Amino acid sequence: METAIDVQLLTHTPDPIRVMYVAFRTCYSRFTPQQIWADIESGKITEEKMKTFIFDKLKSGHSSPRTQVYFTFAVSGLSRSASHQLVRHNNGITFDQQSQRYYAFKEADFPYVVPETWERAGLREEYLGFMRRVGELYDQALKAGVPAEDARFLLPNAASTNLTFTVNFEEFLHIADLRLCWRAQWEIRHMWARARNALKARFPELAKPVQPKCGDQRLGYCDEPMAEYLKCPLGARRIRLHKDEIVAAAKAGQTVESSPLSEADLALLTPRPEFEKVPAGSPS
Ligand SMILES: Cc1cc2nc3c(=O)[nH]c(=O)nc-3n(C[C@H](O)[C@H](O)[C@H](O)COP(=O)(O)OP(=O)(O)OC[C@H]3O[C@@H](n4cnc5c(N)ncnc54)[C@H](O)[C@@H]3O)c2cc1C
Image 1 (cartoon, helix red, strand yellow):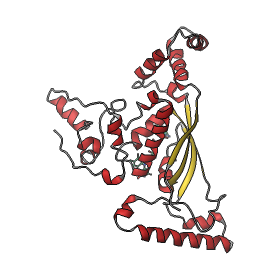
Image 2 (cartoon, protein in one colour; image 1 turned 90 degrees about the vertical axis):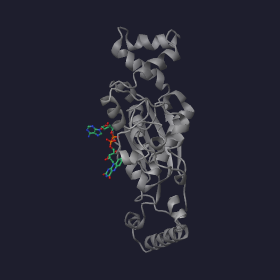
Image 3 (cartoon, helix red, strand yellow; image 1 turned 180 degrees about the vertical axis):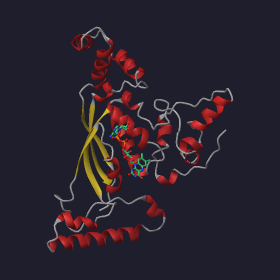
Image 4 (cartoon, helix red, strand yellow; image 1 turned 60 degrees about the vertical axis):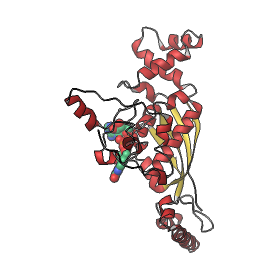
């Protein structure tokens, strides 16, 4: 059975802006956190003031307030090849994933992802046929008494999986740095973009700094190899700059500017793969 990725924000720290604000201010204020909280409750400290304060601190190394708030997501239809990458993140994030030992797929039909490249290569039917054959042998093995933990040895990286994970805001930003980057594998990039969309639907202001590392709210430039930068939709369109260009300009006593990342720019990183191939530009 072919699956598609779905990501939902299940729950979160009830008021993440307020919690981060109180955490930051506790460090810099003569007031107690109780007093700061009371000032928020009374309206003396406004929502706008809290947001401005938090976003001013985004580029500072004072990251611990951002680790005090959590978001819990549900993911389904992600391939095991992408989930294996996702679960390598372990600092500030915790996962629970569907087991292939304790749950055995039924009716010779296991869920799997079909990359579009197979379709474009004209090999979709061969791919589906192979998955059908794997499903049949998996089922035959289970019926012959092979335990699920051994029957699963047949299942390919394409097999899809379900997860729940809880992540703090600092780690959410860090994973976006790496996985929204065009160099990340397409499926995990699309998955993290969906997580960002789910966050944006609930907390639009918190989604703004969730960018690939080249974004104006993050590292600010591309530090990947130049040849890769030129293949990226943001690099090829000269939307973000490469570090070599910035260094070269600085040596020449010049400064170079790039525009902040817009939502439309970010959408370039997550279209269907066939639209990702853009003509390479050249560094100025
Ligand atoms: C494009 C790309 C290609 C990759 N290719 C491969 C590959 O070919 N093979 C492979 O095995 N892996 C690969 N990885 C996985 C990579 O090596 C990391 O395992 C993965 O990115 C998670 O590491 P992290 O530092 O982001 O962990 P996180 O847990 O997300 O780290 C969060 C933060 O904590 C810090 N941190 C994490 N652990 C520690 C620690 N123990 N001590 C101190 N600080 C820590 C990190 O520096 C980071 O700032 C790839 C990742 C990417 C993005």
